[in-house]
Image (tube, rainbow, N blue to C red; front, top):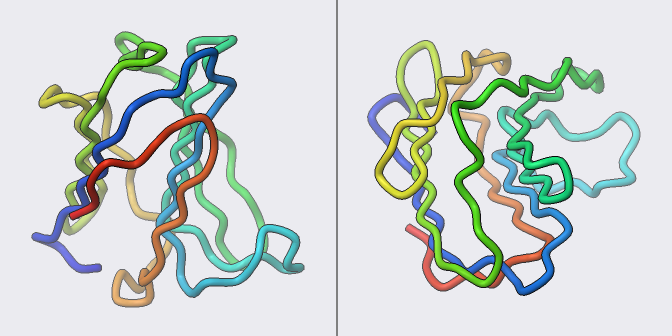
Length: 128
């Protein structure tokens, strides 16, 4: 990852969704790894609370989740398009073409970000 790059995730939210996560990580690692792999950005869509959380893990420590969003952009059983634009100081996140929030970098070396992890109540239709 480096400034000027972007990641595109297209998918469909499952019927009766619970949550889904999209993470940009430094190395593959595992969820149970201690300390965990650095995670530059983890996006978590929580359907029960209508929250779209984002946080980072640096040197084995998870930071506080940022929660504020203008609206919850995901609808069950409907397609979506997430774009994560990497800029010099932040990630800029768009959903369905609308900028939803910025997330300032916690991981210092953007070049170490080399893994995309996706799991939860969604079906991926395209990655770019």
